[in-house]
Length: 269
Image (cartoon, rainbow, N blue to C red; front, side):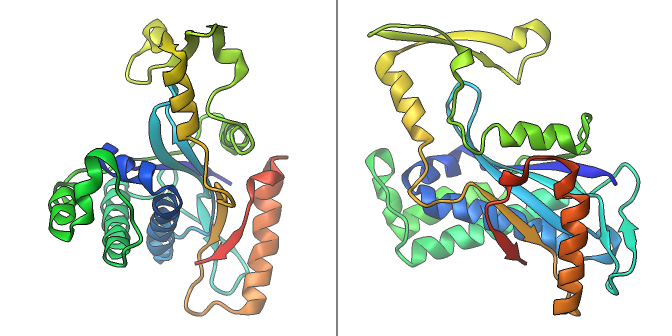
């Protein structure tokens, strides 16, 4: 069974809002990305079934870079639950469609949260509490192309699950990347994914205070679940079909890797 690695990334302008409203905006990212996939995948032309989703909030240099990684099987079971229906070989879902639908769904939810008074703003963003200022701030994001990555992983599903599992119970930087530190400076290795070859490997030295600031950016709100699971449900979905699907999904997806602790909660979409 083919699997696909899908990544939804928030634009930097939204990342600034997320930094001050972590629980709300990260949750919106989960919901908008999952609804995007379940909406399109529910179409028989793009049939898909389940999503394992993991939140990362950092780039390699520990900057704020909120994005969600998803593992999705390339197909789904038929509505009668008796057979597997594969997606088109070598192709999962159109990236541009994913990008534009996720953009619309996310912004709709973000604007609703602002209208409900759920968002807080501080520092340079204090003025965004005003509805008109917020509308002006968000307007360009409606036209921007949001980054969505969707490809079949070269190393197979096990490689992607293993990659994601390393971050479910780990912080933004591993000790193995630390080169030196003292009371005034910290030096560490990071990857610049905009560069190629040897130029990708970089070494950076930060003042200790800046290093700590970047580290603390990625502390999640208490009780927030950074990994979730979603299932596509058709209008004719029944309890019996859901049970059959759940068994099939666990056998074919979860048992393809020993990384069972990736699943934090189950949401039926």
